[in-house]
Length: 159
Image (cartoon, rainbow, N blue to C red; front, side, top):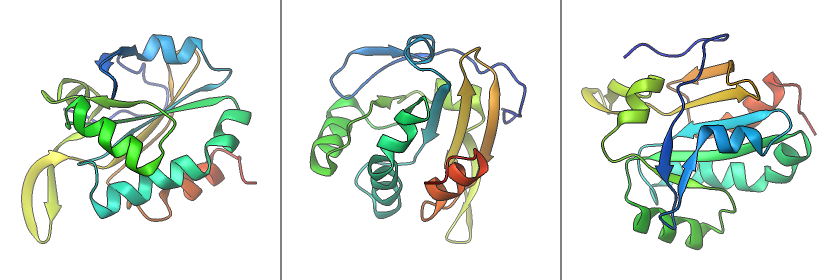
């Protein structure tokens, strides 16, 4: 599936969060002033995914005060997401996409290099969507470490 670019309409979705409650992009957009930061990660409780999630957690007040919601999406089931959220004190929704439908639609599922081998899986990505549902920033194949700070700089949200 092609990756999203600035100006594209972000495909809407509804997925269960860590409590099993359905969460939609439209709902998240309606609840924010400026938009939604949607980040895709391969697997809960792994070192890189934990680092990235904790970076979003630690900067969440800044995201919220700038008018953004944050949501993470992985193929993990809700129960795994719930354990991850509890263990890391993650105060934002973690959505479950085990069939990769949303990841496919957003260009975050496909071939990638992993330890020198080509594999199919989650492409660590972040897409920022404005209140009208348009992509304002899209980053694919990102590194977990330092990624959140780079996003904040690119959006002009440096503390």
